[in-house]
Each structure stands twice: as C-alpha cells, then as structure tokens.
Length: 188
Image (cartoon, rainbow, N blue to C red; front, side, top):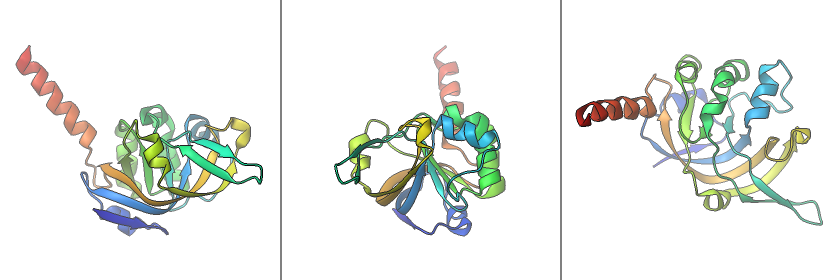
C-alpha cells in the first residue's frame, strides 16, 4: 500500500504504476459532467486545481442547523462521460490525479502521460464506506450547477484507490479489454 499525502506533486504521481494500491490523505475536489463542461467552455475555475486530484463524484451532503456539512455517501461515478473534456482539464489546470470508476479513453491516457497525471479507480457500490474516509468539507463552489455537480472541497484520510492508468502510458482498462477480446475469440 502506497500513501499519497497532500500537497501532491508530479514527482510522487509519476512514481505510481498501474496496479498500485494507494491511500490518499489530504484534499480532493469533486467534479462531474457539469464542472468539466464548464471548464471546457473556458470558464475560470473557482479553485486552484494545480497539483490537485479531481474525484468524479456527486456526494450526498447533509447540512446541519449550524451550517456544518457532513458527507454521507461519496461513491465514484462513471468516468468515461468526462472523456471529451478530461484531457483538457489535465492540460489546462495541471491536475495530477483523477478518481472515478470504469476507466477512461485514449485522450485521457495520452494526457496522463504527457502531463504527469494518473487515473485512480475507486470501488463502486461503496459510497458509504468511502464517505467515512472524508474528514471535512472545506467548501463548496458552483452550487448553481446543483449539489451533485458542484465542486466540493473535501479533506480525506487514507482514501483507498487503485492506479488503473498511469503517467507512463499504461492502462489496466486497455489490457483487460484486449484480453477479453482474445478470450471471446477463443469461445466463438
């Protein structure tokens, strides 16, 4: 198990390889479809994303009477929906990590290699367990996009992920797809 602690650096991220199990401690920003489209359209990010990690997640967040937020569910959403925009967000904003589920395509893999970023897979169906790793909500931005689509600034402690696309051009998703096609040919 590798621990990746905030502040994140390109050097630490470039050392990660496909298959590495990682515990992230520090900060994550959520960002789904609306945020990626918003950034793609040239709008300024309300947060500095340089050397940060974006989590494809629409967390379930409760607000108490004192205005304190608690995240009750924070599972990953399917990442491939961000494929048209993700490579530009990596390039233009200097992010070093993306967390989601299901992997991403060639444009994102190429951007990971060129700009020093990795794709982390979080376990789908474990939203409540993953929420337990969130220790604080530091802020929320772009709430006008709706709560699931807003950017949530989260503090996390030992948030569990697996590297499935690294900054060396390797993709576990690509490997599994190729092997599956070979297996299918054998059965047909």
